Length: 341
Image 1 (tube, helix red, strand yellow):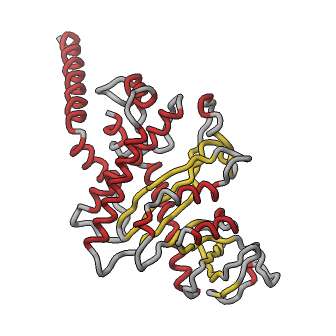
Image 2 (tube, one colour; image 1 turned 90 degrees about the horizontal axis):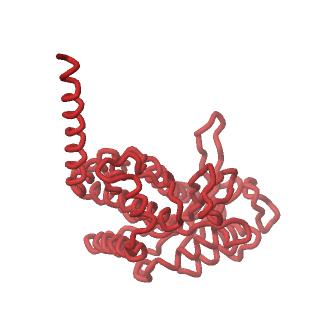
Image 3 (cartoon, helix red, strand yellow; image 1 turned 135 degrees about the vertical axis):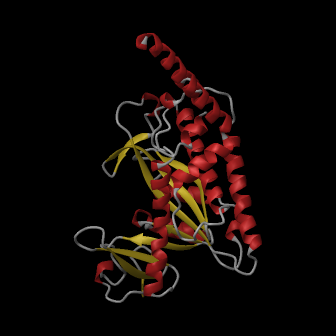
């Protein structure tokens, strides 16, 4: 029943919208039912790994590169959540729960892989949590002739994070603040040539730095990106834009599959909500990959995909809901007959 709500595609899978089951039954399923959440996550990850390996086996001579994207997303919440006290914090002026997410991209595949919760000041930083997430990536995904690349924004440019990523045998493409100082005393914004090889202060690694211009506001905004790879200024700028794929994922899973709509009173209920929301996204993504008419590099119609999966996976729930609606309509019409007479 809850999967039926998630696959409505409206982004509002609220238990009170259920018809076949009561809202209290759905709440008990999320907060108290005795199903194994860890095993559920393990099965989803194993299936994602199998899909990725199948993709590689099907293209042995054109094996697409694996990109690992990490970022922090905020699930804004108002009101009191007493049982979530050490999960609810303010970060970048947003009060709520803040998740550090690891997202895998390989060719057309888009696979949410792992998540950590930032628990406020005095606890591991988002960059430290991101390094922890990298340990969940199986060694077989990091092997091969084409080294995976990790993409991150400017919040992950610290020395410890960059060195930690390189120690995992990964290349890195990460945003960098325009005010970051270089070894020669200049700042990043003082660079005049895209693709310069310089040493930022605090790093032993020579980095290639480039930039892009964003035209989202009235004034264009300059964003800088650096990498341990000497990719050249133009190509590095294009590669740096690949990080925005995780932003599209956040927008989709929040807007279509209700990731931030949780209102559960327990951490277990909230985490299960997130897991099932991710499952709804994965089901729709796999359906999109199996659709022969899909055009590459075009973000799909997630609402239409969700409705297709809804009819395929939970047809009995849909049928029962429609029968209940028909029964209510018949009862209403019968109640109107005496009034007409």
